[in-house]
Length: 208
Image 1 (cartoon, rainbow, N blue to C red):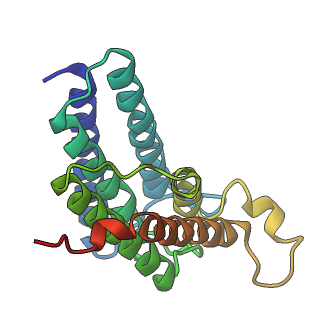
Image 2: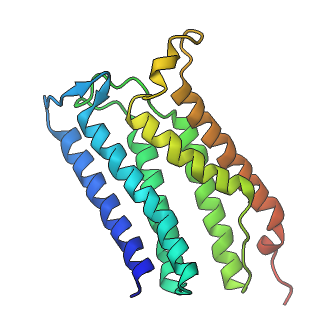
Image 3: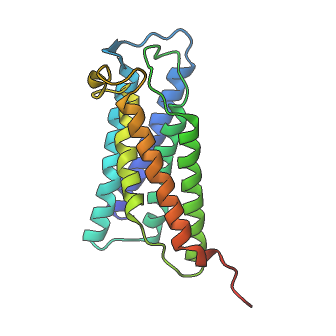
């Protein structure tokens, strides 16, 4: 196993540890976690872990290409690690948890559904294309989706910080953190639609 693949495996282990930690904390009744300026300590730690894990996503791919160590195992594990990281946090921060009563920024359910379904559809297209020996090329909206998610999710974890300082100057109920989630959802939906349109030939049955 080469170094880029080891980095990917480390990201998977980090995601699993993060999920276990969050679930354990959320299931402890009457647990009081300190917070500062609306940011819960547990969610702050989770945001830092998320940022570190996200950075390894770019690192392993960069090193694999630079050192010419792209492997089938790495190509399989990398998207698995990405989906585990992003989708698990999207789902977790749909719900309010008792350990963080000051948390007021959450991810709307419809946004989670759109982003998760998009990932399932795109992964299915890539799988079918691979079976046919074809490669599904990335599009600009897919890259924007990834970047916007990597920004929006930590902002939700931090209850809107640092943009929460500017929320009071907007219309009632409008929060910058919410719009970041909507933007990520838009890019996710657009990239999914483009993937389907550009690769619709992959879904056609071949004539025997």
